Length: 247
Image 1: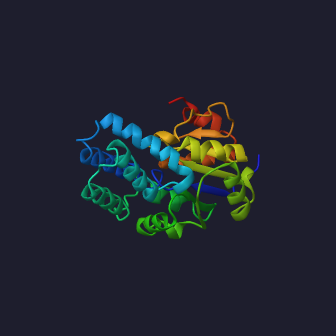
Image 2: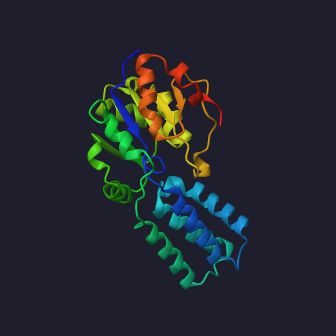
Image 3: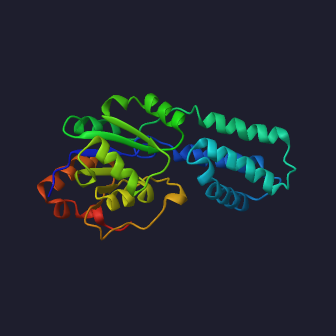
């Protein structure tokens, strides 16, 4: 089995908190629109708007903010007051400057692996916002390459691992999203390591590819170095069998 030479890391909710800010803003949005729609109906309409708009606006805060405005207009039949639209915009702006809170074991894990492997940050979303969060995290110097992409697909990982390493077969992708970080990386030929986060956007949910030989699941980033050692030694299926247990 070819040795690993490169490890890709997702950013949002893998290295630092992100989804919690969307949830808090969604709650604020529901409160602003409480006179026009109940919470459940409003959030369902917002999710539908986000789905529709992904192909137009992509992933990230700006698209989320525009989807909130669109939903507000829809549920009020165009009667939403201008000052409420202003408050929705304010909520979006606040998300764009929120502090970056790195997750436990993130720095420690990157420092442990740096030097032995090429570390690549692979994140999707708004370019400026992702660059801001990376700079604020203090983790930027630990990466050999940074790829901010519009979406994550099989071809994305084939391109990234070919550009910065020795191909996907010698690469690994680590992240909290099965849909974006794990499944397409495995399809590209890489290892896919799932690190669950307590909050993951519903549109990122897909079944675990438990039967894929290059799929692994760990509880937190602190287990990653041990998993890699086991993979390199050819004993990962035995020493970390729990990594493949169903959620």
